[in-house]
Image (tube, rainbow, N blue to C red; front, side, top):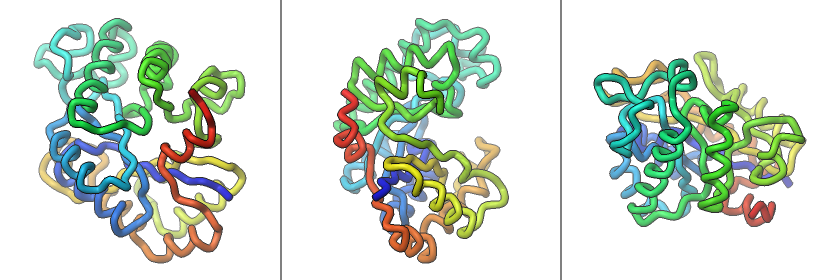
Length: 253
């Protein structure tokens, strides 16, 4: 039986994003989420997580959206104190500042009284060759699995830290439908453990003005709460889980 983690990214971005993710958990197929502890909606997200203990909650590490948690990471920010965009970040960011910021974000998450299930990153920055070693070091320190970054079996993530066999990122864009989601379900059947990324949300002002991927999130929410999708998962005998169940199976640490 395939075990599938359906993870909603960007928990903590805003109240609209937070409430959309909780809607997709309570009335849909989302099982897991990852929190942006540096964003304005983080405390609201933490409160919702405590009210919904069945939702797996990890940490969405951020160095290219909003402002840092750590106040001493000069290479990560512009003259206004905001993070650089991802293109500029990988060129000028100092490794020591990235590690400090990632650590501060994890410690802020822990300060909410929550236990993280896993870690990933905004815009998959942890897959970059300069940043991945930092992510691996932090994952080892906190004993947390990392979202899959490579299909290369020789990549260290697939031997030391990797806890799912497949990561599906294709549920994203302007042309999403329930049928396209179900087509992705057929893909997961080839693996024992899979993570599928999604971005459900209700639209609010911070999301509408701050993200280029906003209206599409409402469509994602509709698909993730569609009875046809839920029935397709049952028909394929796919077991919906969080990273807690996957980690127990993998004995990654």
